[in-house]
Image 1: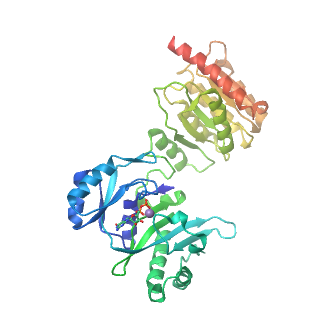
Image 2: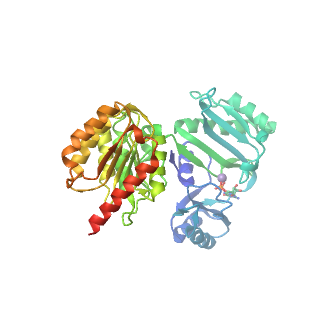
Image 3: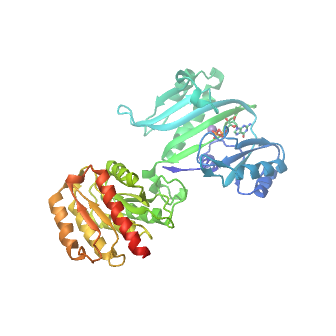
Amino acid sequence: MARFLEYQGKEWLAKAGMPVPKGRPASTPEEARQAAEWIGGPVAVKGQVQAGGRGKAGIVKLVNTPEEAAKVASEILAKTVKGFPIHQVLIEEKLDIKKEYYCSFVVNGAREARSPMLMFSTEGGMDIEGVAEELIIKANIDPIFGLQMYDAIDICVKAGIPDKDLNKFAAFLTKLSATYKKYDCQTLEINPFVMTGNGDLVCADCKMEIDNSSVNRHPEFGIRIARDLPGEPTELDIIGWSIEETDARGTGFLMNMGYDEKSPGYVGYHPIGGGSAMMGLDALNQVGLKPANYADTSGNPVGSKIYRVAKCVLSQPNIDGYLLGGFMMANQEQWHHANAMVKVLREILPKRPGMPCVLLLCGNREDESLEIMRNGLKDMMTEDGPGKRIEIYGKEYVTDTKFIGERLLALSTEYRAEKEA
Ligand code: GDP
Ligand code: MN
């Protein structure tokens, strides 16, 4: 999911006509001071980070003056929450909160639903996880028409909203439902939205996630990679995305895994499918090798796509080897992989002679596929040829993670010694 920080989500909410507090982000204490001055009066200083529970983590603070805003901002900007550094704070007018409410729109994937679902509660705020189930009203929503006023009123009655406020709350929820649809959200959680002293409803927080599959419909978001990444995309992530973005024939996934090029023990990692990827990690973990990247070429991708992924995996600098990890049995025509591997290794290995390549492949057309690789690489797999550390395995080793790990370790130890000599 493409996930927005609170301040970004609130900007999109505001553009959709939803009520949000006056505010703007700041990256330095001085910017925080200026923002507080621009707002005038007491402000909230809120650390911007992709994690919930910020209130409890101490990165949501209320202050009275621009000077205090600067001081608190400098404290928050120095913190790390759940492993994420905080690069920005949101400076917002302090709300006069009478009561906090919870609502979220999510995807209800249950077979009988397959629709958006609203969860609404009068018990919003920082302790939503502790609120009793029966106090959270849930309703599936028509994916085309969205939440309608009459249903919203019904939901508000169930939630215990007093009669005089029913229209106000129902209008708020229907508008939010329309916003959820307009932006193709996967999640839109407002916890809390609050009623202020003069009776207005305002979005005090915002967690907005856009459905990856609809990012192409929203150039206005400027989302570069419609993929779940732990942080800023690396060069490999960007290349990986470009392989997928332009070619929907099977999966050709590729992303960075925190590769530290300066440390030994990393290998280019190329599993085929999710289950295989887990077994491949078992293989590596057992012998203390580490994956430089994550990849996946499943769903019967075409050879050209597999070739591009494998070439990127193998081109990573300083890796000690390469694992084509076809653990489990892939239900796809494996000769596409075989052809792709021959082409890639014929291009790469003359430049990196002796690099260990353990190729495990099984599934449909296995015998032909292994034959394609053996034949296509035969002239390189001689005792002192560039492919001298290519080893090819099939179904006999399909669950033998220990063996595959040990082979790769033995070959990569040799290779390192040879490189360092
Ligand atoms: P979270 O803990 O990451 O969900 O961060 P929130 O943005 O929800 O903030 C946590 C709590 O801080 C909210 O439940 C409110 O009680 C309080 N809070 C947040 N923003 C404001 C604000 O602008 N004014 C006031 N008075 N309280 C706020
Ligand atoms: Mn919140």
